[in-house]
Image (tube, rainbow, N blue to C red; front, top):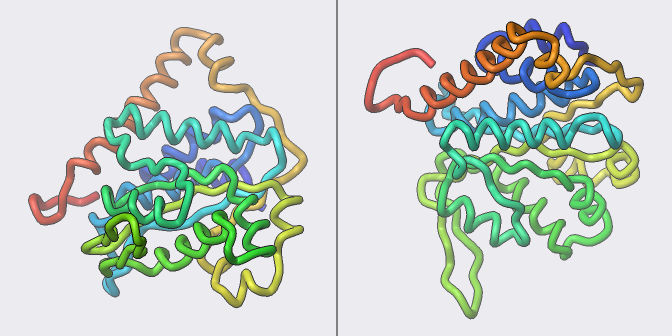
Length: 253
């Protein structure tokens, strides 16, 4: 089980984002903070860095935690940071279908999907392979290994096909309650490759309450300035990475 010490010892911008999220949630939820930060950085760095074997940093994370533990707060913080950074197209809207997901990536091949109701898709997938949620999940599994490969869109009689040239780079920050997650698990999730593709974080149900960021800001003007400086520093670094392009200039991310 992760602790707040794991968040505070995480290096780099990823650690700064994780700390910012952790300290903004009413209870100490280190897994939620790290899952959110990892998926954000994966989306931000995709198409900018890659491993020696060509792997991209886009990643699927999932947080399994009870109601009221801060999942929604973490999701809203990520949305807020991305919006303030001036890159709203990095966020994917909630797709109504598998083709909608593909079409969104066709417009912008590098996106972060904040999947608030991932548990519903898990439940649907375990019951029927033809439901809209199941088809979205199936598409998500295929996109996991789509680094640099062109994606052929779905064919429809009444509209044109949308292909994705040069590959799709999808990152996911998903969330589910433990009850919905565990009740839906079966051997298909392993055989079909669902679980191996997600980096899952499980939070401690015994929540440790902490001073919230809003309360910190009320303590003193000095503390408020420190909080604002932390957010501004994160925004500045994200904007720098977004503008930095490996082929246009040399530099070290």
